[in-house]
Image 1 (cartoon, rainbow, N blue to C red):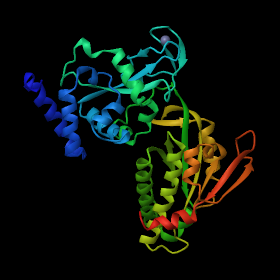
Image 2 (cartoon, helix red, strand yellow):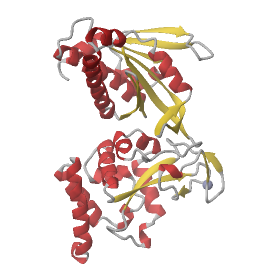
Image 3 (tube, rainbow, N blue to C red):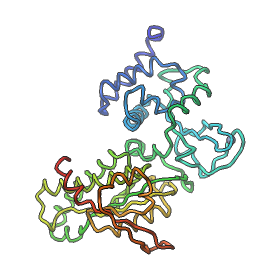
Image 4 (cartoon, rainbow, N blue to C red):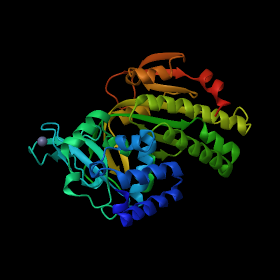
Amino acid sequence: MLNFFPRRQSAIAKAVATLEAYGVKPAVRQHLTAFLQESDSRELYHANPRRIAERLHLSEREALRVLVTALKEGILSLNWDIQCPMCRGIDFNPKSLYDLRTNHTCPRCHTVHATDADEQVRITFSIDERLRRLGREADDPNFRAKVDAQYGVVSGHQMLTLQTFRDFFPRETIPPNESLTIRRVAILFSDLAGSTALYARRGDSRAYHLVRRHFDLLFQVVDSHNGVVVKTIGDAVMAAFTAPADATRSAIAMHQQMEALNQQLQLTAEDRLILKIGIDVGPCISVTLNERLDYFGTTVNTAARVQATSQGNDIACTETVLMDADAASAVKDCPRLGNAMSLKGLDAPILVYRIELMKAICTKASDV
Ligand SMILES: [Zn+2]
């Protein structure tokens, strides 16, 4: 097959070579080139990222980063396919986040349903037609259904929580006055304890430098735990994760990174950077605010209120977080104390746990 389309083959190879500038490793570029050149056309039309991940010998998250980079270079196009909850038919029309609406009408059975970014919206990739024009045979619903059944799908919400996507496509947003339903998101808030005093003691520029370093570390931790930093507010960070266990593991790693930084800078007891962290998990909506993808709803408010109960070097979280077996197992060795609390803005008291992490932080800070 290789010899029939020499021009196409070299165009693909040339396009994939540009990914070197983004740090995509030679072996990955080689696998991607072969995948795009040699695959059956059905593999390249609304292709399931999980199957591509297998072809590239990468984890799902690593593959998504590479695919989004290829999207930026115009090698692939991204589709926001919507599966109808009634007839299971798939709407291929949305070509960008901007094409999604609060309610979606199925083009096949005309059912109107809320657009649910973690259930009905799934992302797929197609090869750009300038690199390889696909024939009609590429569109094979049975083939795609078989692949989806075997691998599972990547939800639209997973793309929203991919930092690379937000970094490369800051203009990809949900239209004004529209929102997407998110069934389950873990929201984490962190804040620096005593930062006002830190600024007063250290002076603005030195304190700001410390706060910047703390932000850099937290951004890396969130990204490496499959999450995304939604925004910073003063010295606080708001992050989102599709799985609560990623949020709890991220919280532990954040504390460890702060402890390592404190040791590295030999900060005195009163200058040590100490984080207060709160987590909640539940449904919310995603919207665009200030030209940025943001989350709204009770889960976000609760996470913020719960964070305010943290005393430092701990994780404050709701009972719902610990009801997730993976999230609970991440902190199973840490002492915890549950308290029914009435939090500002919430109707009924809720059970808030304070998980003490001192031992977990100190035993691992030297490794990070
Ligand atoms: Zn339908």
